[in-house]
Length: 504
Ligand SMILES: [Zn+2]
Image 1 (cartoon, rainbow, N blue to C red):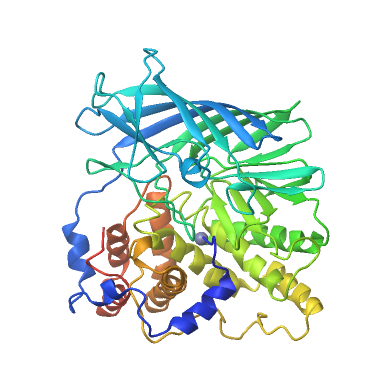
Image 2: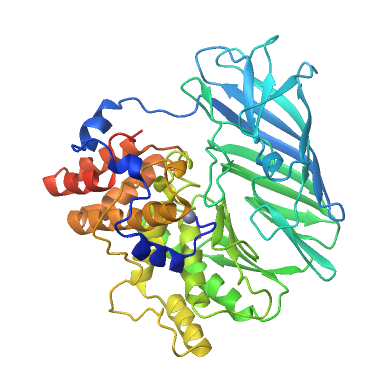
């Protein structure tokens, strides 16, 4: 999630937008929608056919020049049945901070340097290998030199500066193999309100040299000694790194998972950090019990100044601090933070474990994360959520955003008119994206739960167990649901929310 749109805004948008068509293309479809027939027509299980087996990075962070540079050895394997004469890379940093650049790309085994060609999107770079194509079934190591300029920006890719200190947030920052599906390299553009990455699982190892006073949080496990951080992250879709010279970490074991709550030294946020920590822990426990085992042995929570909301990365969650800056927690923020952190933790199950093409089928992670937080987690009324509620009350007795156990879920949108939730990111307006992909998508899953009764939780666990570490498409979900319940009522719900025309 949850880049731009906060949980509270989603509600407001949903109410404001009820009845107006942000997705005319979808509503103008033929009248008879039949996702069952469409899902059954899509037989084969599809996944990208060129895989990044591993990334081995050796990098230095220059905290004065706001630069991370060095190289990565990317091992690619060609699982397509044709030789590849070029390989697509995604380098979002170049689109976001144009001074960033890929220096040279070599065949590490042969020492040969390849020519680079730009793609249609600024974030796409093609490595041209016409002279020695990568044969089907074989692997090759590419050494990629790059230099990423980090912009001063309170966003998921950027740095925040305070007196004598900086926090660097590195997401969308390093070259990655593009997805290669049906003979095409993925060129989906960067999508600011959401994500546009589509990655298979890879193994990452990173050596990052940074000034000695910097604390580093990252996907996987990290260890810092005399300014050199070693990161080991098997089975992740990407690598997130946060480096800051004014944060400490509070470590504890939560049911065997190493839980790291990072605490940047900002004024007035201690109670907010506690709310984030306690709700993240409670959400971690709940989703392990109700959905399935957490994929990793470590989870990092890092509060930071973002544009809004939070940001999910493998084994690491970035949680938004109030836009007003240090010292002020606005009304509604504790409670919003409690549900947002639960949403981002839920993404460890949906996006990190069960992967998807986040640009073409964003609902496959966002609707699920919203459902997990705003329904499953919300309904537990656990002590962490109640504490967020109390913090909110202390802040403002008049706050009307509070959760009162036993009352209806205020995040349910209750719009009469439903629009399809399974369209690509660029088919929605920014507001429509939040309304349909998050709110309506969560309502869709809740409607299935109400209709399916007890078999819903079995279906959800099975969906997770069958697909953890893989990638899924919407048609897979339709088939999974009907495996458990193919009643006319359930089929009616599937046809109400999902468009057969856009089913993949
Ligand atoms: Zn999300």
